[in-house]
Length: 329
Image 1 (cartoon, rainbow, N blue to C red):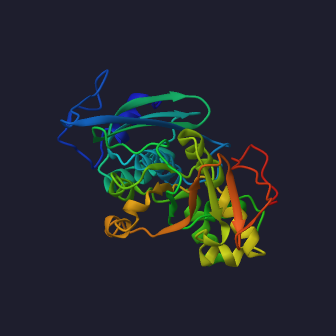
Image 2: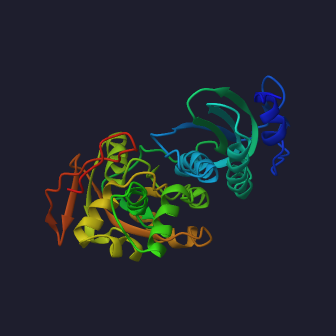
């Protein structure tokens, strides 16, 4: 018997561990019905992952699902929002029960962790791709945005940076590292942990925020453009893991990777001096480290410094599988 989209929906997507009370009508009708909490604003984001561009055909379905949902969760984290509901558009060359089963396993694990309910979507035939629209909510007037950074604000990032690109380089056969480090780096590329709790804790403290999906250098520039300011970043303060440092030829190479590695799904945010003292307390229960890497200026450009001396590094941006990859310069 030929499998169709209704079989996939019934057998896999209609069964899920998360059943939210604010979902009045979920999968199975033309639209879903949800209830937004009183006094909150709806937050919506959409991301698409395409095979060959955002993930390789050899990637496990579970890893692909995690990455697809994590990229959306990271967007909500950057806004300080609470994730709640999502829809999924899945395009496959043909029905593939084994792949869909693995996809649902990876998707359900991350969705359950953040209490996200799948409320609808679509399945269709074509080149393999995944589009997720994630909805959440944030108290009215409290959403974090890219605009709002002021001269004198301090620049922070969560976690460590650079491992996602290092993991991708290993996957593509560009580098050879020992097995233990390779596993760590690959997991950072495919299974990054979105900083949802940290984002919510930053409401009322951060003046601007963004998630690091295109690389710190590019994403911090988005904040500077939206806020009409500049920044000075000390590359010696960039948070680098032991796994990354062990994999790179020099500290400078690791620092450049930290500035350009995309799909990290860490947060970059700015904090006024007035709130700097409350940052550690606010993030105490988020389970994530933070590092101050520089300060916002009024000169409308991003300056990189080391030992307070300017650097003239030329950095290329994040590249997916089909795009030209940077040479590390």
